[in-house]
Amino acid sequence: MDTDDSIAGTGFRVRLVDWREHSAALGAIRTRVFVMEQNVPADLELDGLDGDCAHVLAETDGGLPVGTGRLMPDGRIGRMAVLPAWRNRGVGAAMLAALMQEAKRKGFSVTYLHAQIHAKAFYLRHGFIPRGEEYLEAGIPHIEMTASL
Image 1: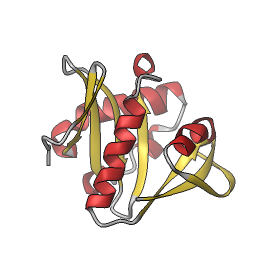
Image 2: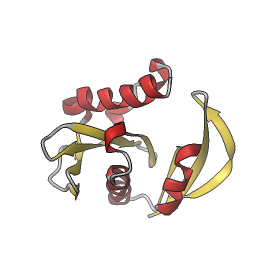
Image 3: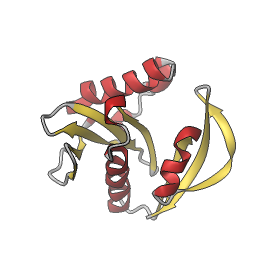
Image 4: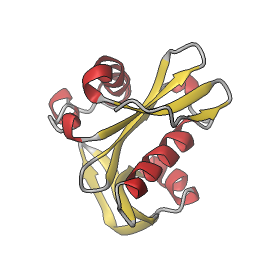
């Protein structure tokens, strides 16, 4: 599933990858961000759904993995994670663009996500609109957001 359709930024690129081939890199980023940094229980983070999802991997120009995200079969974007040293450098925006592009390619006219409240402004800047009330997921305040593709 690896594709040559990558999105490049300053010092990094984002590409679609296959979970089976890249699970170690994808899982390491998610473990560091969600489990270690945000204290999400590992059994919630590793939900067993990854094999059915489309994944993006952000890598430095030297090939070091620095970010990931996934698109679920129902069009939901999730597991967006960027290593601390690479935040606020366009990695998240490039990953989100790649996931939205993949959702559109798969025929979705709308995509959605469960945004951590601290990231709400980020998603607003990328065309997502809040839907419903805030709620707790894995002990972290979230809000559902949707975007037309």
